[in-house]
Length: 137
Image (cartoon, rainbow, N blue to C red; front, side):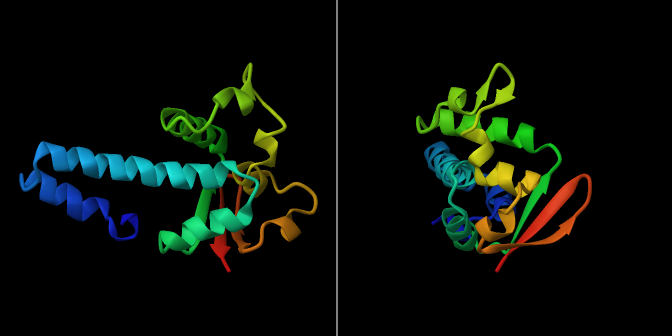
């Protein structure tokens, strides 16, 4: 269902008043579940799982910014709301745990030694001090 969802079309339709509030709630819930799946993929160690989610979204690239720790915190909040993630397993007293350092998000930004073999099916296509862009192979 979420593969075909686009924010612009739906928001415009909602602004025109064509959805009841219950449909809007269901639509919001679907978006939340979609974000939960993507969040889970970024918080696992499985690049195969991340690749599958990116493919399901019909995406080809992943953009990760230098604010990846802020992005991690947002993902942890979403996961906590869905009842699937305990943020304390990833950040304790402001420091990343070993579990956090094994996530796909952390690996893609920090590129630890040997990461090239691990990140299959992704390829780094661009990087600077602020962004890294990976392409789904």
